[in-house]
Length: 135
Image (cartoon, rainbow, N blue to C red; front, side, top):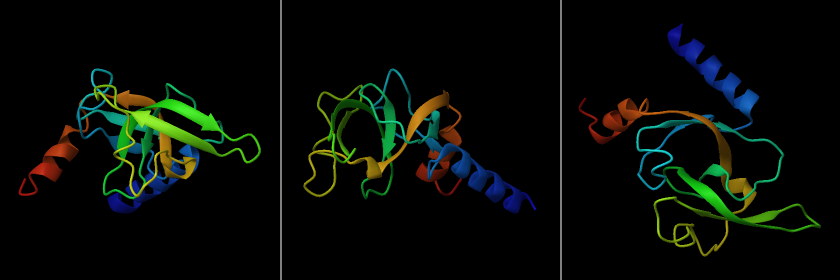
């Protein structure tokens, strides 16, 4: 009963937020001081254009999604597509070297959601369970 209730809640959140993963844990310090390792982010994804300054979670084929800030957007007027460039607040350089394949920009299809809220340190349990599976 507990497992089916959790699954129903999770699927409901996916539907309401429009994000395939409505809740994520920050796994690195690349967004400090804004978000620290172990913070939980709540995501939302709608049809609004992505803008510079927004915090997004993207996954372009990696094992784990990445939480970074959008620093540049180039919109194509005719197709409504956009080339998006991200960077971690604590990182000295943009993310072009992080993107998989030979892409120099992200496409919107790789954006899982935009951060709309967070809970500090609540995700440490997830990090501990991942780092120390014996626990």
